[in-house]
Image 1 (tube, rainbow, N blue to C red):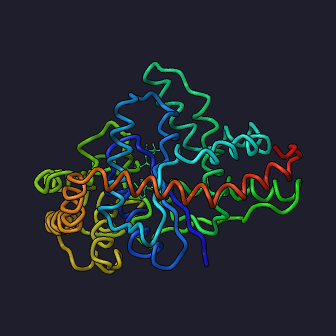
Image 2 (image 1 turned 135 degrees about the horizontal axis):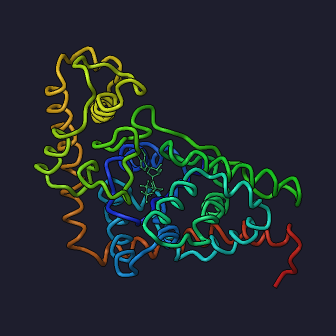
Length: 331
Ligand code: AQP
């Protein structure tokens, strides 16, 4: 059976980008067709300036929202990364295979390092090395497929490169994984700056639809989305990034083709109105289920504990094999 792994960072409140680019597929498709593991990758949230209490709160909230979005612990394994030590054990071995230059070429490293420096902060070493930990997250489960949004493709490529290199140097150990992406909305853009990704740790709140935004807040954000000069509704990411972003969001909500959808609109206003209502309806059941789950925090903790136990059992043989292959004495 195909093994699927993917994760989400508790660096901020989860967004419509996270949902359309990743979470919805995990719940609607991946957990039903594959042996799937999903993870709140909390160690990755420590790579930038962080408040410990907030990371704890956001980790719980992310796990709760993953369940609310439809992940079923009977069908998949849901857990928190830091509860499974095998990820960091393997990460060190992969650091011994990765090269300094390839880490510095990572786009997210360059962007986030610049952002941290712009805020007058220092850049943590873990920001440079975290794609190696992400490779370990993936490789430790013998993962075949990694369902992610477009922004994570470079990191999955790194995981592939490290798996191939390790296998060539030390003997076949890892499965070489591949990224899979949604057909539409693989990169949901910020509503106020449609040339930038809608990222949960961005400062531009009005341009980000959070999964727990009240319906009226969602409507307001979408109705105020920046559109383009001109007035015809055309699907063209380069020339019309604002309108294209709205078309992609609406298409993803309705399971439609964004190109075809563009022909149905003659004004930006109508497109915004329909997109706002579609997003409100998309989020409604997730928000309702989230509310119920918040009233039963013990259930969420139990799911995470059981998930970590299962994940550990799957991960340990792989890490042991990698330790042996690279030349370490058995304990
Ligand atoms: N805007 C997006 N459109 C489509 N997919 C997206 N994803 C994230 N944003 C979008 C996908 O959601 C999964 C989890 O994302 P993440 O937690 O790794 O990253 P993030 O939400 O992008 O969080 P940050 O902290 O704001 O990170 P940076 O600053 O790195 O973007 C992934 O599958 C991701 O592709």
